[in-house]
Length: 634
Figure: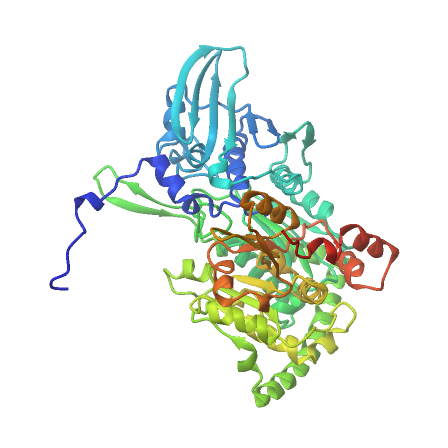
């Protein structure tokens, strides 16, 4: 605009060092920070990046043991592979786009291929030490926050391999801790995927003789309807069975990497199961009926996998390999392998079909389950259709959902995935709370669904009764999961209720609904609980919001004189301006998480079934009295 001073000069142009860039844009490299409470927190990504390098050594035929030790904060990983070339130890840990995995001859089917992983660990650690042992000599380097402190060479009697020790930086992660119930499943998965490998975690050994079959057998929380089908081929391994739970529980892996959000290989596997079963039984079964209650896993090995983010939880590759080759005359030729879709489909079609022809009892049990799922779906579908028509006529839908502007599914236009990842829907109760959230939400990415009182207890009701419930049908329609959970319209489902008895009960009723009918949404990490402050502690100069009694007491001591304390008993008591910061970029969310070995039926029986002595004792031990949370006069 004419007359406006131009303050954009060369002085505004900044060049960041590699470690500064990683620290400033940590989310680009590890997804999120976090304190270790959730499986997706960055400290687990750091651990995985280091272990992945050792796994890749084993995959290339070197080193059958990996020693992993985790103390209060520090981590140590020692493998017995080839060891990093001694002259390259500093470079591969502190120069982006430097690494051995760009060379196909050294690493053919590795997880880490972009030369970033170990560098991110280095930059985000307050201390980072690496030492490579090769043929009686070692090369070491010591860093802090990516800055080299010392390096050198020396003679050694250690066996070949690599040692990495690091301590994640509290400046980045805050007061964090590694949770054993998150680390152990990660270690177990590595053992299931790499038969012959032993992982020694803090003195406990993990290994597997039967690969994915052990994974499914060890983690099945219910009796399968037929023995798990285990099929192996070159670069592919699958397991398949059915249970009586709702939804699907299919784990997926690429080159030993747990792709929690699936990707092209999982989509191909789901398609192949439905297609092969339909052709085997010569029945036009709906794919959702074939896959209802499926428990399984797929693992594939491909060259130079492309993941949709640095955290490598969703495969984006279309082909088994896809690269360019420079010809002697200087021209470029595309070297592209078979598509992942056709590779998985062909394997499943041939091998699963053969298995079902041989194992008649398994085939009969599978068909019985599919027919039962089909009958239930058709019955429920008719009820839901009538309910939706009644709901539409009553014009309730628009009153309950304040939608956001971004809607997405698997066909989201290119370049919009970042926006889709930020979409959320708050499930709350009452006009006061929903009104507060609606006023201050980001209307582009945040939606609000308002419950009317307490939803029904799904655990105690039949599926038919649940299908007749208008409230839950409205919620299902808002989420977009009427037919397929893949059509979920929001990345984050956030249960936002008051921190009182009624609020806690509503929270459990909503979670029970997801546990029973949409457990895969929980397994994929979509369901969260919003944490809002219980106390406001303030004096004339400063205000602090506290999420526990301990935080409140610490704030009282810190602010000292003239302190006023407010106890928030409901979301509606928090002013819109205050609430705005609680649902912004730094909002506190607790992930609703179930491990694969946990029985959903047992969880629901304990929390939502008839009163038991065990549950009464649990409540007595864990429920704080109202007096403990009341205001204190200072």
